[in-house]
Image 1 (cartoon, helix red, strand yellow):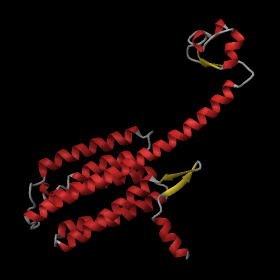
Image 2 (cartoon, helix red, strand yellow; image 1 turned 90 degrees about the horizontal axis):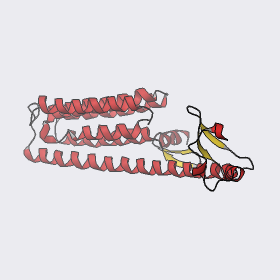
Image 3 (cartoon, helix red, strand yellow; image 1 turned 180 degrees about the horizontal axis):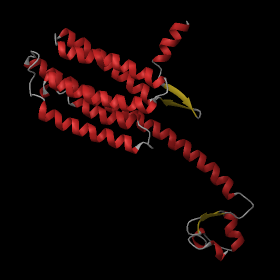
Image 4 (cartoon, rainbow, N blue to C red; image 1 turned 30 degrees about the horizontal axis):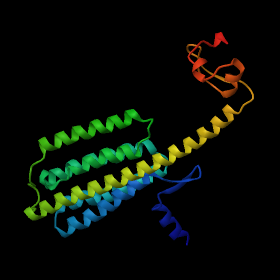
Amino acid sequence: RFVIKNITGWFCVVIQKEGQRHINRFRLAQLILLFVFLVTTAANYLAALPYSFALTAAGILYAIGLRVTYDQGYLKISRILLSSFLNITAFLLCYVEGISSGAYFFYFLVVIIASFISNKEEYLELRLIYVLTFVSLAITFVVCPQDSTLQVIKLEDRQINLYINAVVSFIIAGMLSYHMMKDNFLKEKSLISSQRYLDSVYNTSLDAVFIIDVKNGLVTDCNTQSLALFGAASKSELTGKKIENY
């Protein structure tokens, strides 16, 4: 039971935070990538594409290694490594399969996943990933051949690869976008609830309370008791003026 619990726990992405069910974004992204690499590795094996098989098989090991690194507490490094690995893999797949295979759709995933797993405070990290991704995409279309020169890929197989890569990319992008919107909705709901509580305490206080901008000494807000104390009909009569006036 202990072993089974550990195995199922490794695949669990739901966490409890502030009384709400949230998604561990990195875990979800890592598991999605692991699944994609498992499927593509099997497909490349059946299609007898040795170079593509080697790249996607390495992706399985890398996806597992990223999870281990993340669980050890190296959160920022794990996020950067994940995005960097996807860029490198997308370039190499385009090189060994040709641009016509549609492997460049993985660059689209890099942008979506980076936005999904990055902290809002890490603006520099996110901008760096975006720049590297678009530079890698540009280099790909300059360096990589239109059709593979390393593997024999039939025209029908190239078309199937193109469709599969496009569909998989858009499905994953839609899934991650849904979870981002759901997560943001829960956070907004929690903030609104907290704000309503603070407003009720603020406005039912028996003391007159001013909120002051300490940089210029202007009144930015006041509670209901302040209006009664100074005989004002609305907050606009008190706000925007120097606190020394009162």
